[in-house]
Length: 96
Image 1 (tube, rainbow, N blue to C red):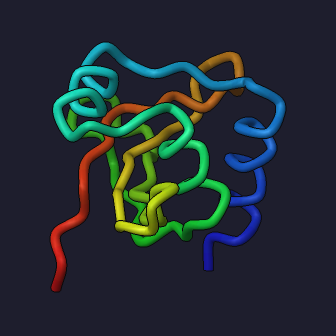
Image 2 (tube, rainbow, N blue to C red; image 1 turned 30 degrees about the vertical axis):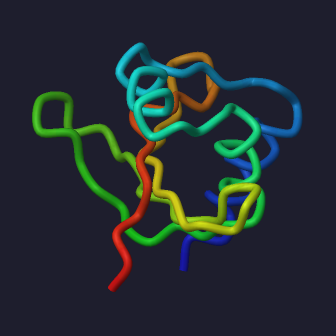
């Protein structure tokens, strides 16, 4: 369903055209994740859901994929004004 969008996000990751918010960096550190976990999860993951920002109404996407050790993590990403991917947050996924 979100194949083209995921491919665009992955292209940005591959080309290092992404930025992380301070919130995402803090959450990544709190969950003992690395930037390599984040990159791997996006490259091997899938978009689970499209959301809308409450204030700007911009689309953002919840991506779920494996960290390097294989444990699932989730990220929320969007495209910035310069078409870089903005990683809004990252966290360990809860097992269902």
